[in-house]
Length: 142
Length: 246
Image (cartoon, rainbow over all chains, first blue to last red; front, side, top):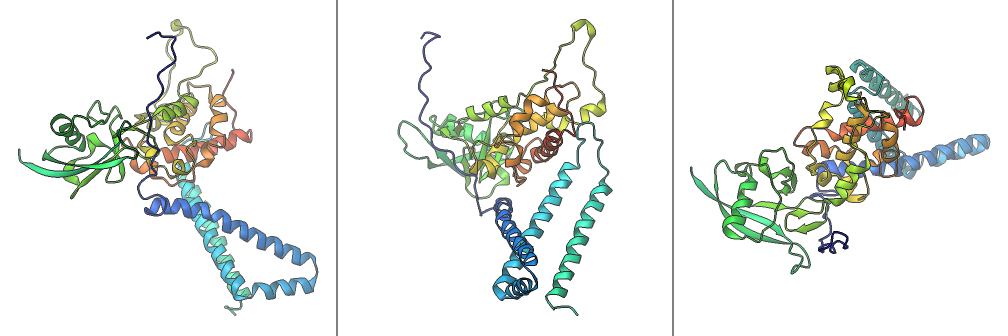
């Protein structure tokens, strides 16, 4: 056979198979799907935030109406789900930080481990304060 | 040495006769110290010579014998039969088209590896008379872990992102790109930047970490990808210079 001849047509192949346990049968794949799903709920959270800012700009009556709307069980449940997914995202993101910390990044020297401890701590503190504030605003705490 | 019968379910695909892959069962008399690859070789030698599978070194170095054993991507030369209970199911690596039986199509994998230019890129090669490129132990430590990859493709078989996005550059290729970007002798990260920064590059990874779990050489490609994300961002933001003179 001439070296210039076209190569032989490829053998028929069977299509690639998904990994065993994909997408929901194995906990790391479930985490992957859940992490992807956080984007939807965080977008929903952003929409609610924009709604709040819009209501603030429309005067006191609009703000009171917004608050009344947010106090409905449906909105409370939605807010709780958004909060849970946001927390999940933050925890996963902090976990990625642990991996990034392992090496030197170009000319930037290896960051000290305490930097990440102190980096995670403020996020945790902020979330705790946020939760307490939500409980106070929700009337669950005096 | 004592022999014991073990049942193997092996996925078969013969393109000339099978429309879909099908499982075929074999009973093999295994010795206590056999690995799954020994059993596959015994099937091919003594039971069914039509069975096709890849292997070469039998010592976890060449990366040829990667397959799914009971659903997990492993090097079959390092997977002892005694560690499994009941029937052992052997399948070709997931996320790759199947050429025949346990042999998968690796062209796409090799092309992805080539895309990231996994070699040292220099503007000017030194003359031989100037001696070798010197590197300290500390400089070697920065990338050595990522240079241990044997291209076995187990990480690709485990990756959920690849199951959804087949064009994703993938763990091994990104780990290799990161390895050369970290190498003090290399000046080519600007050439690798477009691939790593592309739609199919580092940001497609959402860190399932399964690639690092199955890596037989403990390369930790998930770590390489997350570090590459940060490096990529710093280069994009011009906080880090892109090493290139080409």
